[in-house]
Length: 216
Ligand SMILES: [Zn+2]
Image 1 (cartoon, protein in one colour):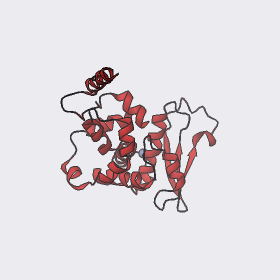
Image 2: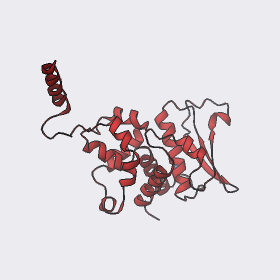
Image 3: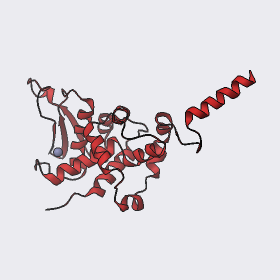
Image 4: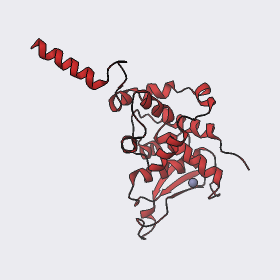
């Protein structure tokens, strides 16, 4: 049995990030797939177009398959959580781009790989590392889920991997292009709280205000 290829999952997701022509989060994954990812011809199908069943109570999440060289991602569009729906589409995209055997359902290695791919696409490790460097806590789950529109599952995977990334990531992954692409987003959503070593932002602002008051 093969093992989870962590590096391949992260690299494939990063390639998608670098080539979809978006520079902020949340990633618009449907738009990216419609525009075309690499040379894949992928169509997204809503379950509600396939059945009249009440899908909101269903535990169906999604599925992907290939037919005549075309790929299809079906997903449960009636799930209440937007993060969950987005995670499902990214997970299925992962199965396709990672070259998984789409006929094999519930294979532990394939499922884990698709999850890692989806988490990286929705909440890239390099971006989260930078957010932490800028003085934000990743324990604030709601904030991260809101900004990235990622599911609890994506968040949990991120939290689980955070801090114990294998050395290869730091040594062999060039994250500078991703950082460059999303720099504007980072500055807007996560302005650096640690710009000044001896002040936190509030103190700095208070001092500026005091100076302004004196000038008036
Ligand atoms: Zn799967």
